[in-house]
Figure 1 (cartoon, rainbow, N blue to C red):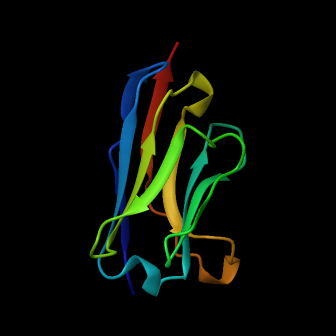
Figure 2 (figure 1 turned 120 degrees about the vertical axis):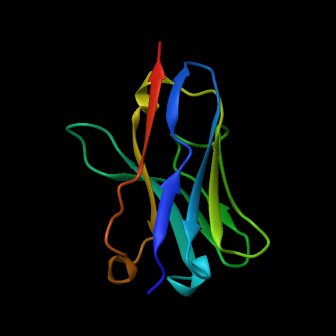
Length: 118
């Protein structure tokens, strides 16, 4: 099975930017035709923040529109999340996984911690 490893998190001031990566051991879209970034803050449920389909179509919830951009590399084995104008409420552990189909979800990895200071 394709494994997913997230990286790129860190500590950043409010208004700053980070680029997260999700490296796959094979094609990202062999897991599911749609892939997503999710996040989970302490004491809160996991929520999706960006999704991309194999054809390149993207979708974002309101919390991410205009600030986050999801993309893949040409080899389709790495998923990226460019996050701009970060806010303290963006502080969370970020994960990548299949989008919208619970049956396609892989076991959640360790994720990558994003901390935004005010």
